[in-house]
Image (cartoon, rainbow over all chains, first blue to last red; front, side, top):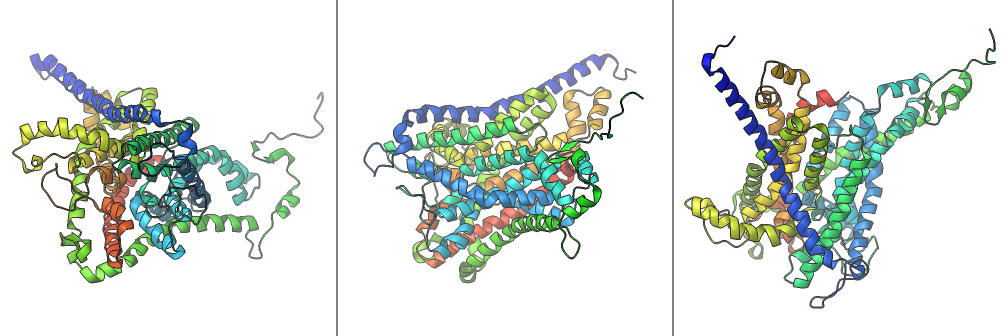
Length: 290
Length: 342
């Protein structure tokens, strides 16, 4: 039994020590990973909170050199862009999710679509910007809110589709079968039984996708472009928080930096609130696709 | 028999709006769903039409993006041919365009990020799947995922004002002191550098690697773990003997997926890397990447050939990213689908 003779205890202790050291290292890795999160958020709050007031949300940016002004137009712009993008993306996304889980279930075509959606999620955002520039901006003759929303929708669709699919997959097969057994047609089963049961998961996926695209800058740089004035027109360039923060951050002006921090704080707060909400809404089983 | 109900009541599940008990008689039910002449129910026709169209849109988007970029890059492709990929001059005034500094910058900054991020990502995933109790894994996992939720422009802002100066004043002097003989750690220290880009990318990529690794680790059959424990293995031995060998291709896939993210990351990198199209061995020097160059120069590009050259950078980027994504997905699918698909 004891082949190691007198060294058995030492060896066991050594193995335990090694295990403790390696597993301890993973714990340290986890803690160290959370350090940047803490640093970024705390610095963001410290720098940004002083710039947040009524003026920030209601006023336009001031010209260079004048202190003050706000980002009211950018806040509204971001909301408009994100809203418009979801109008374009949600139907197609949910449609694809339904296809993957219902008529296309386990087919080769569905695998191809799922693969395409996953690859589309990995396409660099700046490339999506170029795509939107070539497809929307140039034919329309100028930068526009519509082009920005199109770029964002392109990024949003696969995410909505894949989370919807994951949510639909969680619906127990028995539920579907009992509906079919009652003589309810397939399409009605898919819509009124499966989709309705998964509605919460699907909504969660939409919210998650909204949070992700609200923080995007790169696809907006040469589609929505940014705007220093109030504009809600679809055909005009429109301001977005992310673009505004980017422009201000790389400018040499102290006051603009202050505003950039405030804008970044508002943006992060919006995004993190949405993420937290997603976490609260989604059941334990729902996998967020990567 | 005492009181028999007048009608026998069936207890059926209440499914959405369909109250099974109140379904009309059989003949009426079948008649109530309209059918097309070919025998397909009308509703099914529209439902399939809608879902298949949506799926087709997603499929065609991937192809459309690649095709549009390829077409838009044609002028540059024709003019510079293969020289574009190996040229080192980027001189818009004289219309000389070479992509090598951008490719180099993209590759080096991404690899740097992965060298830092991969051990952390795997470590986090191991900790959350093997060490911590379920409720704690949930919370920690959520916090790590928040790292992925912070917008990249915010990372960029933090990189400019906090991380860059910190690296310049605290980290780089240490590197010079102990590793200064390497060409990697020589030259002036200015705050915007390849090193800050790599560091900020590492922070952004860790949550992706750890999330995919967690999925992969949770796909390891419970029997393998239990068998190892039953043989008296310590926690680490279980990981080394049961978990890691089973999931190695998934881990590699996760890291490659992280590479794909790092390659395409634009704004945060554009803000901290300095945007100078030069190839330098030193990590302290400013550099540039494919994505950040497009972000910086696209709206300022005056001539058509300039725009086309920038789009060709985009084409190079998307080809790299497609290649990487497809490889990574294939590696991960094999492991995960078995467990998660029904």
